[in-house]
Length: 417
Image (cartoon, rainbow, N blue to C red; front, side, top):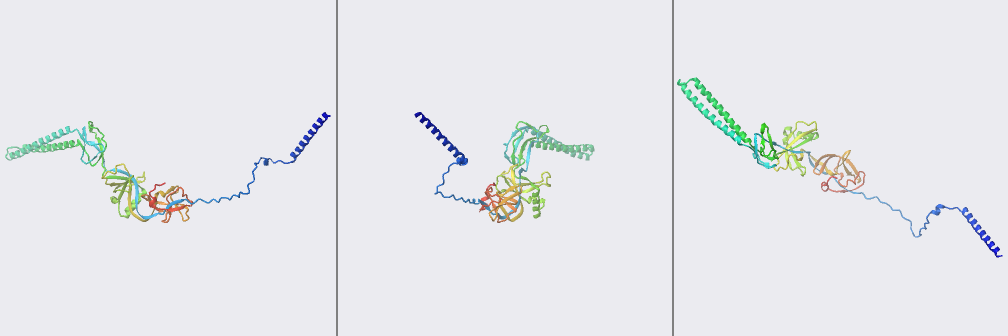
C-alpha cells in the first residue's frame, strides 16, 4: 500500500511540471518581444519641478576699433630724391720720379696731411753731386764767355789799326757765341739737377689723407725707368656726390630749368642737398657741378655730379648718400599721409579708407615724393577721407569697424608694418 502511494505521488508531480512548461511555452510564443525596448536604458521620468530650457540669443561681436587719420594739407616744394655715392675730387698716386733707395717714410698710414708736407725721402747723394757738377760747369762757361768777349773787343780794336786780320776777329766772335751756348747748357744742367734733387723728396700735392705706404724704406724705387707708386693721397674737401638720374627724373630737371629760364650751362645754380644714410634731413648743401651730355643707353640713366664743402671730413669717398634736387615748384594744397599706411598688391599701391558707413574700402592711389615719414598722394585721395594707419591686419576691405580718429603727428613716427 505504501509503495503504491509513492508511485502515485511521482506521477502527479511529473504531470504538474509538464502542465507548467506547456503553459509557459504558450505564453512565450503568443506574446511579441521588442529587443530594442529591452536593450534601451531605463530613463526615469523628469521631476515635475524642473522647468523647460530657454534657447540663448547670440549677439554679434562689436566692430574692432581702428585708428584713422585725415590727410594733412600743406604746401610742399617739389624735388627729386636719388641715391648715390660720395667720390673724391682728387685721388693721386705718389710716384717715385727718380731712381734710388727709399730712405725714409715721414707719415703714418692714414694720416691727414697738408699741401707740401714731406712724405718720402729717396737717396739724395748722387743728385747733390750732379747739382754741384752742373754748377761748376756754369762757372767754367761763364769764365769762357768773359774771356771770349774780351778777345772780341781787343781784336776789333787791333783790326782798326791794321794790327789784326778780319779772320782773327771772326774767330773770337765765334768763340764768344760758343761760350754763351755753353753757359746756357750748363745753366740747364743745374736746373735739371735741382729738379732731380727735388724729386728725391715726395711731398703732398694737396690737403688730404694718405693711404697705406706701398714700398718699405730700403727698397730701390724708380729703377729701370719704371715709375714706382709709393702711396695714394685722396682729397676730401671739397668732395663729389655722384648719382644716376632716371629718364623721368631727367625730364623733371629739364622742365625745372625751362621754368626758371636756365640752360645746362647754368647747372651750377641748381642746389643739391645731401645726407648720409644715418642722418635725419639733408644737413649738407652743395651745387650741381656736372651733368653727362647723354643718357647711358645701357642703363637709361644720366650721370649727375654735385660738389660740396667737407671741412670736417664727414663724407668719405664711397659713402652711400641720399641726394635731393629741389625743383622750385610749390604745391600749396598737397595731401600727405603716413608712408607706413600704404600697402601694395598686383594692382599697385593702395590705402585702406573707412567710408561714411564705417566700412573699410581699398583705394588705389598715385604717389608723390616722400617728405620725412609722410608721403604725398597726388591722386585717389580726398581731404576728408579717413585713412587707416594702424591695426591693418584687422581692417580688411568690407569689414565694418569703429574708426578712432587720431593725429598724423602721433602716427607718422611708427615703422611701416
